[in-house]
Image (tube, rainbow, N blue to C red; front, side, top):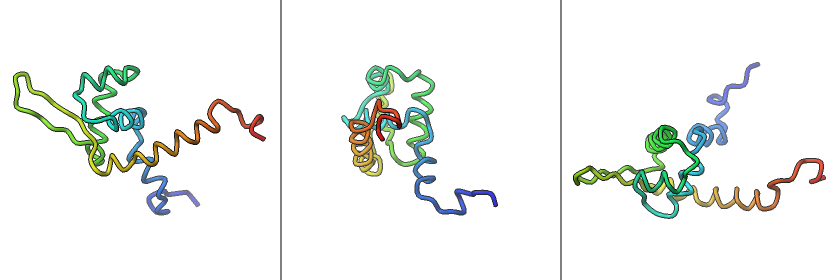
Length: 112
């Protein structure tokens, strides 16, 4: 019998669908610091290439974690911020950081 995540109703599969882009965690972590314009976000998350950042922001916006606000200035100003759903993800990020603090850099053999 083949495993079907849609059929199983696995909550972890739902999370992975939302955060499936490579840089989602880093973008969410950066936006936890507050709203940022694209260039500021790109400077702060300098490891992300421009197109990847664009794709990640679009995906997170579609998933309801990021809000994109356009200001009618010349040139147009676009600011990204977390929605309530995105800000609530902070708890999960903090737990992952705690786990890395405890286990990061260790291989399985040294943990036993």
